[in-house]
Image (cartoon, rainbow over all chains, first blue to last red; front, side, top):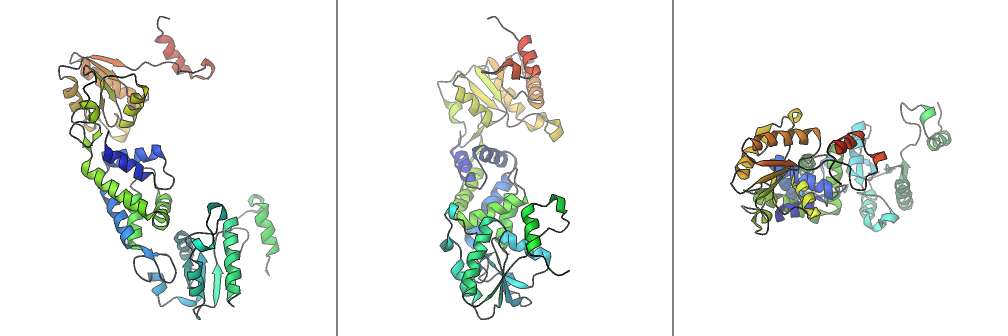
Amino acid sequence: MSRALDFLTEALRRLPGVGPKSAQRMAFHLLQHDREGAAQLSRALYEAVDRVHHCALCNTFSDTEVCELCADPERDRTLLCVVETPADQMMIEQTLTWRGLYFVLMGRLSPLDGIGPRDLALDKLVTRATDGVVAEVVLATNFTNEGEATAHYISEMLKARGLQVTRLARGVPVGGELEYVDPGTIARAMLDRRGA
Amino acid sequence: MSRALDFLTEALRRLPGVGPKSAQRMAFHLLQHDREGAAQLSRALYEAVDRVHHCALCNTFSDTEVCELCADPERDRTLLCVVETPADQMMIEQTLTWRGLYFVLMGRLSPLDGIGPRDLALDKLVTRATDGVVAEVVLATNFTNEGEATAHYISEMLKARGLQVTRLARGVPVGGELEYVDPGTIARAMLDRRGA
């Protein structure tokens, strides 16, 4: 067939969740129906690799030395929220409830996948959190086993340096009906009950 | 966040089957864990758009004017097999039962998707099949409604030009147990029964 096509199919398989059949389907689609899209994707990949690096302060993806959010003078610089990914950060931003800054781990501790403390930017987090301005660090990692372990690890690390460390509240989701909420969540909500 | 990242996420959505969430996941993965893969994919796309065109004879994807298979002197040039896609062609090649050449439609008639006779390379097929050498055209389009309609259309077109036109046999699959084969297939196998 075509060596350039084989090369493309092979390269598409490096995308997460794309197996041999999908890679072939994608390659055929681009070449048959969307060559402009293929050219655009080629440029976008080139530019992203060339330009995107990590914000010097919050570690998220950024085209500039310090990202827009970290550079925003309206933000409360005494508050730092730690999240796993830029996607999580965006979700929190959408709630419009957080006026502090962020630190993006770009992952989570996951011994089974071989991701230990050295693979996350934990040194960078310690430097960031102990800048003398940050007073409270809110841990907003996921409530999965790995996210919880990550939160615990960071909590110990930062408390030892005299920082106030908090964790997102767990409980029944908004709109949740008790009959359909899992028992673990109800148990947690019961333990963490608060004055009404 | 990062404009280069937004541009990449947008471009990834042009891949078939990739929605906003997957595009974001792919972009994060490439930038965080596989920048080399991203650079490789960028080059592969660029080269594919630049080099891959359609074989002058069989219409499949090829880097050269005429693809390797069409240029092979060992092939029987009196036999032409019509398939929908390069993937179908590869499946037939794998059976090692076909010693003729191919014509790849790069699609199928599909009025619901707005794909009519003009969107397939049917003129090219007529020119190819009436070269004076081809004696038999085997229609190997899929046995779906659209594939059957495409086969019917091509069959009428080529028979009118005096060519022998055949269709892949339908029947019970190899290893098939009658109890688990659908009635339509059994009915077809009964109608098409042959001397034992």
